[in-house]
Amino acid sequence: MFGIYLHIPFCRRRCNYCDFITYAGKDELMPGYYAALMSELQHQAATLQDLPNQVETIFFGGGTPSLLKVEWIEALIDCVRSEYGLADKAEISLEANPGTLSPEYIARLLEAGVNRLSIGVQSFIKRDLALLGRIHNPFQASDAILSARRVGFTNISLDLIFGIPGQSLADWQANLQQAVALRPDHLSLYSLILEPGTRLYDDVQAGKIQPVSEDLSADMYELAMDTLVQEGFSHYEISNWARGEAFEAKHNKIYWKNQPYLGVGAGAYGSLNGVRVANTPSIEDYIHKISDLRSNGKGTFPAAVETIKLDPYTVQQETMMLGMRLTREGVSDFEFRNRFGEAIQDVFSKEVKRIIARKLAEWGNFPDGPHLVLTRGGALLGNQVFQEFV
Ligand code: SF4
Image (cartoon, rainbow, N blue to C red; front, side):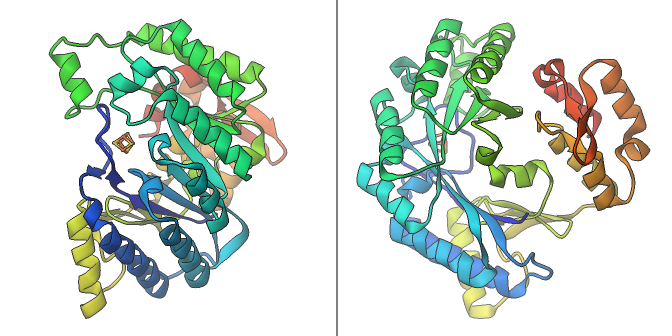
């Protein structure tokens, strides 16, 4: 599998918990940014060696990709198709903020080729949305989901956040029920992380806001595991649930299976041919670097501020650390051997022994042989498993 990630670092307003690479108040840079994305895509297609012969996933992430003009989104998809080759059934996802969506815009996204909409709901409770500093209200979130279904989207994902200060277990249960009632195909549930430098972090530090305890947060996660499985969702990744394997996020599975992807845009990351790449986080610097490329020409990764060549052992470690996040399938020993020429046990015998002894993981039988998979306890203490492979 090979995918392309396009980063759209524009937002209407900065949310109180957000530490992503994104900016508010820079909309005037959008036309230049769009032109730079097109140039970077074209340049990379012409210069990168050993590219897979077609792209199977495109992901517009942010930031707020739903601030882009639909014509630009369509042109970027067409550019990937003509420059790289796009698989017939490629997954084309776009992250959307309910505060930026109209039924007409959603319908035009579908016409433009987007076939998976990931809607940042975060909560259906007004107080939570206000505390998070979101620009939308609960009705806009529900309307966006219903509109997406009405215009014909058959793959809709919702993001929710739990562990929001002031949120009770009953609030969280109500959120889960409301989400399920809207019949999404996929759910991503994230525990709120208080990141230094954010307004929420400062308010907690100053004692203005009381954070949710770790115990309550763990109870919320367990409640989600139980509720969503009862509702027919498969828990296939630590933070992700799908209405069957066909709805598992193909693009994100490229990351979790440590497969190649190209990152395009300011602040985008990529991983290709054993090299990890980080592009400049600044929109202005990105546009400058790419326009420089138009006049002077340049080698691969023209907007990179960091490229790291990974040694084979690091790639094996990352394959385990990321793959163990896949709660349904874990890491296939067959795939590991095919890729690295040695079995998981040959490389990580001590680590595997330790996590199995602690009942955090187990070997499961799959059609292609044994897979190392998290237990339910391992899913709750995932970080302890991932750290074994760092
Ligand atoms: S909409 Fe998303 S990316 Fe933008 S500021 Fe809010 S959390 Fe960050």
